Length: 467
Image (cartoon, rainbow, N blue to C red):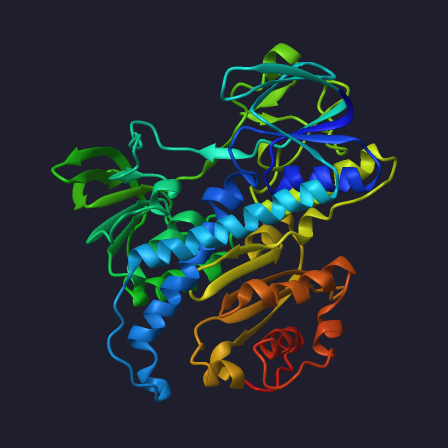
């Protein structure tokens, strides 16, 4: 059977690309090596982690926050198997939803390991060993990313003691002590889950800060909030060894600038030092597809150097974010259908789903300084927001960055409850080239958390009302 498009990988980028292509009239198939659709995000990443984040937040609030609201309950008891069932039910519902959407849009699903034999030819090897070769006019590589671990650190095959994010979502009991290697998004999210459920958590980070790439002021403030919540941090520290020790593990680390090594023991060690593009077994070298530092090289239209082969998502340049991959999937499908879509990479938000959340869009202060762009800052704390006080959610603030000459909003950064939702009103504004004054003059309902965004925009012109 011949297709107009074959997508390899059914994560957010892949399945969205396939659905959009089918909507545009292209005969489309999607190849997936996992037993279920949805890729890492739906099965062992974004979705299950958010289920545990929400459940652990509720557990923590019941144990520590209800009394101040006048709600008297007994000390909550953790039923970890039931919490894990909630997580799996959430995953199953999302996976079934993707399967339904693929069928609804008449996308052919092909299970097995996909490899590119040549332009227009995709080999799929099923788990039972059977092999079929599919023909197509175009191929989209959407195989996502895999776990990256530092040199000398080996993750357990069974993921019981030295684990990746996958294993950290499946722990059978709450570890008394958890060491997280890496102070990025994944490490902080999963570290916060197990801290709320009772673990003593220590994060070891190579850099002198957490959340690399985020606005520096935001990262420093967020570090203080996490420390206040009980997570310990060892910054500017290089992990040199992780070894099994009894029923747990021992981590050896030393100052990056030099100095005496330290050791720390834990029941579980989570390796959360980032991810790498997943191109294993795709046959890219044989097909002549160019790679650079493990990423597939593409042009502005997502085309590789080999005609008819495209790539999106985590395997190409840019942030490894599911929503970025989705937009790229839509974009390449529309390009193949003869349309001329566009993605504004300055308007792709990033969110850390801890409590409180951290959200960012556009440029950071550091990026603006490096580019020599004059800017103005508007900030507003949630301590001055009526709804935040009513909700006992006053940690954090909103920060808006605007061009000093044109007033066009260049970036926004938020720490606070619901920051991942609040950031999108700035995203819409930025997509339309809006100014801080446009945002400041937009009426916001009272009392809402979003009023803090308006006040931060007002503060750009030094006319915030409530501070």
